[in-house]
Length: 83
Image (cartoon, rainbow, N blue to C red; front, side, top):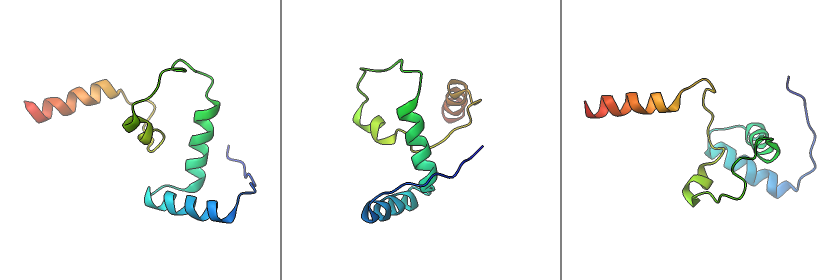
C-alpha cells in the first residue's frame, strides 16, 4: 500500500532531482523509494565490501522482476549470441 509523504527540501535540490529523474525516465517518488529501501535494508551481507565505481553508479537505477533468474537469462542470451 502506498502512502503519501510530505518532505521539506530546498527548492533547488527538488528541481535538480526532478531533472535527474526525467533524464533517467523514472519518477522522483520511485527514486526516493528505492533509495530508502537501500538504506533501510535489513539484509546487510555486503557491509564493508566496497563496490566497483561503475557498479556503484548503477545501483538503484533500474528494477527487475524479483522472480527472474538472472543466471538463466544470461545463459540464454549468451547461447543465442554465440550458438
